[in-house]
Amino acid sequence: MIRFMAMTDMTDTSGFYRRLTPVRDFARLAGWEGYAPVPDDWVVGTSDIAGSSQAVAAGRYKTVNLVGAAVIAAQINAHEGMDFPFIFGGDGAGFAVPPGWAARSAEALAAVRVWAREEFAMELRIGMVPVAEIRAAGFDVKVARFQISKGADYAMFAGGGLSWAETQVKAGAYGLTQAPPGTQPDLSGLSCRWSHMRSQHGTVLSLVILPGRGVAEDAFAGFLREVVAVADRLDRSGHPARETGPGADWPPAGATLEAHAQRRGQSVGRARRKVLFESLMAWLLIRTGWKIGGFDARHYRRTVGANADFRKFDDGLKMTLDCDPATEERLRSLLEKGQRDGLARFGLYRQDEAMMTCIVPSMLTDDHFHFVDGAAGGYTEAARQIKDAP
Image (tube, rainbow, N blue to C red; front, side):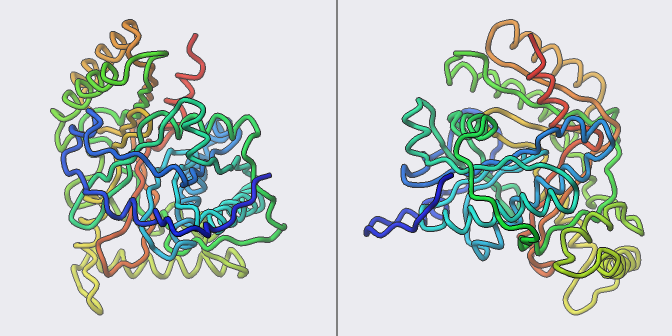
């Protein structure tokens, strides 16, 4: 098991991510523009749910997404809102932190593993890997900031290092000390109150595109630019949420799940009643347009849609697109050709709806995070197609 200690020398790299200039053009990121190498003394954290495909088959994908997002929520709260790069992967998450943060990152990760096991009987595989060791293995960890809206930006990862670290952790390396039973992570802000987003144009596509074996970085980047160019022809680049934001029904389908995240020692029933009351107030404000105490529910709903991470670079490309049939066929043909040419490996999963899991530190500001995935398997099923390919 790995134990982490704060750095004691005078070199401080903790401001690395905060100083990165955000990139506003998603297509630029496909060519690896705007990325910077994560400092050598940083540490990468990874997590994924063992048996996530079986959970999806059992209809528990909303729970899978909640557990994946919980990893990020616990990290945000452990570091008191300080900037650091993280990425949501559907059935898990990845992040990178400076050395002085590593100990509390490890504690937060271990707490989420206990919580996932005790609340949902899900086994979270977690670990933290020094960036220097990733580079010694021949991979890199590079990060960019994608400015998705005025209020939010998301980290994009390249270099293959995050994927390599996840593979090592799945194999049992770089494990963390077990937290005691009953340990509760701080999951403040984690919620799943929005309705599923039904396709308006044909189908919701979840795509996972990884580099072909041994392909040159520039060749893979050129292929990704082609894929992004096709997706950009879709209405709003395939964004699954309407411009007014996602739907809001009452009672929300995720109320019980959110109660498991927010109960902090109280009963699930009591926590659920609180979630239902808060969501009822928000639902009424959205329907009526009334504003209370500076909170504009309709502005908040629009901002949720604007902040949603429906596409990302995660040592490859992941997208959840509301796609018309003709564009779906163009994408499929392009991906199949790229796979035949050895440029890429891909998984593509079709469903009727997308869904959203959220981290909202405050409803009065616009810097909240919203993780989009397909509602019936999404990234987990798309990634499984790659794994199961010959």
